[in-house]
Length: 363
Image (cartoon, rainbow, N blue to C red; front, side):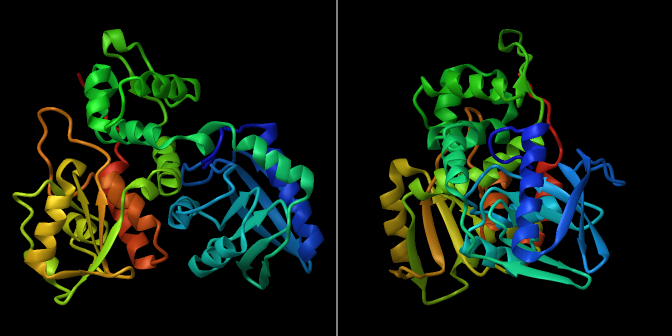
């Protein structure tokens, strides 16, 4: 996974070994690394293969590591672990009590450096929370927070979103990219430099040769970082309608609005009964659109309502129309921020159908 600063070799292995030592201290469960970068039978590579031992019984795991110490998309982590042909284990620097609870609800097994753990396999059942990191480990996390996607700005995430959704923008002029991402022109160069330095893209843009090198991992990183850095800035407003099926007859034709979340997922897969309705509005005329929707569908403000309106943080590139639903990447990301296994299953469908294919950048 590595949804944090890119760490390889000794740093990654060190995180796993330290977490295994902490587990022995808090739960009395032994463990050792069998193999780094373990290639599994289904062709998927894990960050490591480990074996845990308790009461004379061994339990093999495939490990995904992350250097991120905050999580908002546990569903994304579960998707990664589910790719393995054996039980998956998340190893992270820190798992908070709230995150531990969410992991347990979703069946995501984990270890962290403080000895917090959730293990549920065979006769091995461990759940440890509330353990604190040592002062030197806290300082290490502060250092990591100054590097990589931990410090990714909202504007950088806007640009990366546009590139992932419309890969032809990889070789477009900076002005077109800035327009699509709704950012200042000066943002673009720094984002490209960072993506190149971290091995996500390569190629000469002057010859229209820029391309993705590791699009799958960039998607994982964006989905993990988006709910922490960008989504809180989208001016969310909540409402409720007397008619829970209002969205089925809603006409967005004359509105700069797109369906997101559950409704978009249902429209893309026909396989999710929406529990909530999410709309993304182009912010240039958002207030007029909200007023129209409130009056037409008899919405009322409700902080816990099942209708959420957010500002869109992108525009379709020149020559492309506004689709009825937001780009599949955003639908996928929003579904994974829920704790609903139903939504996670549909997110997997969306990934397989719309995101798994690695498109080539075109000019």
